[in-house]
Each structure stands twice: as structure tokens, then as C-alpha cells.
Amino acid sequence: MVERTGGNPQAEPEGAAGFDEPLDRPLPEGVRHRVVSIAAEAFGSLTVAELPAQLRQYARFTPSRRAKFASNALAAALETDAVFRQRIAGRLRETQPELAAALDAGTPPPAADPVDVAAAAYLLRPAGWSKLVAAAGEEAQRAHADQVGAETARELQQVKAELVRLRGATQAEVQAARAELETARREAESLQRKLRSVTSDLRRGQAALRKAEAEAAQARATAAAELAAAEGEARRLRARLAEAESALEASRRAVREGRSVEDMRLRLLLDTVLDAAQGIRRELALPPVSGRPADTVEAVAPGAINPRDVARRALSEDDPALLDQLLALPQAHVVVDGYNVTKTGYPTLPLEKQRLRLLGGLAVLAAQTGAEVTCVFDGAELAAPVLLAPPRGVRVLFSKPGETADELIRRLVRAEPPGRPVVVVSADREVADGVAKAGARPVSSTLLLRRLARG
Figure 1 (cartoon, one colour):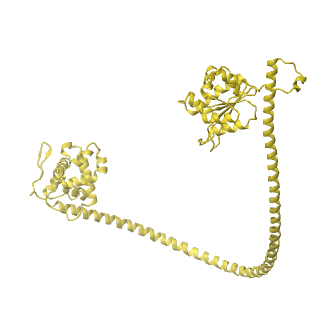
Figure 2: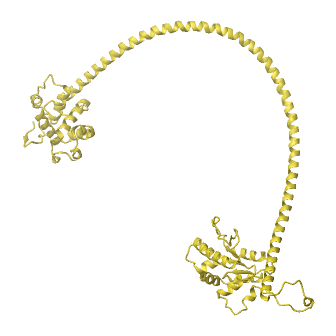
Figure 3: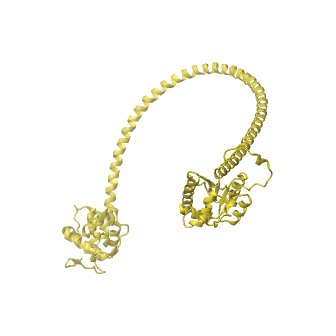
């Protein structure tokens, strides 16, 4: 029996009736569900301190959610925690006092649901409670067996009725199948006669086909041989035509390239000579004449002015006026070592901004002087071509892979005709010495930077 003091049950003594009675089989599933439902309902009336530690997380759940999510934890706590089970049993005594009193007296109500009686006995643990639980399990099994038997009987009746219906339908289908079989037999006999006729025609057709295939194979072999001979002749003709076209194109390209380069060099040299002659004519104010008797007298003529003679005048090598005098020469061509100048003047800027700043200044210089300006950048280390729109009056070139900007500058100088003023801007001593030997006038990068800064 459970004694209550202030609503809190006390643990049953170890020798109490029914406390040590074991169950010889697992708790029936129906009884287990009813025990969990009773515990979930009584769960909310307990304080958190009265709950086992593993059940405190479900204290705020509704009874239905406790029965759904905490069923296993509740069943385990009721089985192992006697104090918690006694507290739940105490709430059961309050809600169902008649059933609790009857179980304590050992006379469960005959009309009560065996599952309810077994669940209450499991929680209250009166004398003989394990027998009540076992009896409830057996009763539930008998009820389930009776229900299964009734359902089986109904299904058997349905199967018998369906069998009778299928028998009638099968007999009708058998009669129809027999009629169809007879019709099929007659059709099969007719088809066999037709098949024999068709087989005979097919054999004659196959013989004619074999004969036609043999003739076609012979014709194909003859055509293939003729086609192979024709293709061989066509390949030889195409090869000879390709060789002739290649030779013609090579000769045309050689003539075109040689003529264009020589024409360009000759025209530039002619323009240089004409401009120089016109400048001398303006300076001397000579009237246009075709010749004089004195021209036939042998003498030593003065040498023509060239870019090297400008430096002999009273100007220092870093005076911007020196560059102005060089650019004032007829048909002057200025070749700029781009990165050499930018890394001398503004090395902290990114390469892209260095190029844009230098090209902007060279465009102004070209517009002011009318000289031909070519800016060369080193492109040997570039992973991809630089996208750049050159300013007006400035030619922008990048060296090819495997070639430095210095080599490109030397090739540009060698491409000019002898006698044309060519000015190379670079602080590289090796570049300056090389272009000087080719007839160009080297100037330092600092000189160009000062001239660009002057505007």
C-alpha cells in the first residue's frame, strides 16, 4: 500500500505484498501503451524535483506529446524507479479510487477493461499483480485472435464468392477460346498454303538476287579500280597544282615585299634629301637655279648636317633644347625605349599607367614637332598581347617572344636608309653604343623626360 503525506508518496518497503513479484514475460503491448498514457497524464502534476533526471526535459510537453516522444523513457523509468512509479500510482489512486480499492482488495471489477486493470495493477503493485498483467495479455491475445478469425471468415466468404464468379467467367472464356482456336486453325491452314507459295517465289527471287549481286560486285570492282586510278591521277595533278600555286605565291610575295621595302626606304631617303635641300635653300635664300658654271670647279664641299653635329653646338647633353634641335631636323625619326624611360621617370606606377603616361607625353611631342615617333616596349615576358589604342602620331611596338626591346630598336635603326636623322632615347649604354655605330643619335631618357615635363 502507498501512504501519502502532503501529496508526496513514500517508497514501498521491500517486503510489501506484490513488490517483488516478477513478470515471466514482457509487458503486453496494449498494457504498455495504457501505462505510458496514464504516466503521461499524471506527469504534469509532479514538480521538476519529483521527476527522474532523464524525464525533466519533457516537463513542458503536453500529455499527448509526452506519450509520443517520451514513451520509451517513461516505460524505463516506471520499471526501474520505484519512487517515480509510486508517485504515478498515487495520482492514479486520486483519479480512479474505485479501481484502486478493488485491486487492493484482490477483487478487480469483472466489467472493467482487462487492459485498464492490468495497467493499474502494474502501477499499484498489489498482491498477484503479475497474474493480472499476464491475464490481461492473454485476454488481449484472445481478443486479437477472435478479431483475426472474424476477419479471416469474412475474407473467406469473399474469396468463395469471387471463386464462383471466376468459374462462371472462366467457362465463358473457355467456350470463346475454343471458337477462336477453331477459327485460328482454319486461318493457319490457309496461311500455310500461302506460305508454301511465297516460299517458292522467295527461292526464285533469292536465286535472281544472288546472280544480280555477283554482277553488281563485278561492276563495283571494275568501278573501284577505275576510281582509284582516277583519284591517283587527280592527287598527282592537285599536288603539281599546289606546288605551282605555292611557287607563284612565293614569287609574288617576294616581289611584293622586296619592292615595298625598297620603295619605302627610297621614298624616305628622297623625302629626307628634299626637305634638307629646301631647308638649306630657305636659309641661304638662293633663287631656284638648275646650275652654275662654278659647280663644275673641283673643290671640297662642306659636310651635310646630321644628328651628331647638333651636339657640337653650345648645349649640354641634358638640355631639352638639344632634343628640340634634333627633332627640328628634316624627316627626323625618334625611337623611344619605353620601359627604360618610364622606370627612370616614374618607376612606382604600375606598368599599364607607366605606358599611358609616356604615350600621352609622346603624342603631344609628335604634334608639336611633326617628327615620326616610335615607342618600343619589351614584350618578351608577356603572357598575352597588350590591349592598347596608340595615340595619334605615335607608333607603339612590342618585341616578339624571344626578342628584347633592345634588339627591336637595333632592327628599327638598321631598317632606316643611310642619311635619315634617327634619334634613339635610352639610358642603356649598350643600346646607345649599338645605335651610334648604325648612324643614329642616342640621347638619355632624362633628356626626354625634361622635354616632356616642359610641355
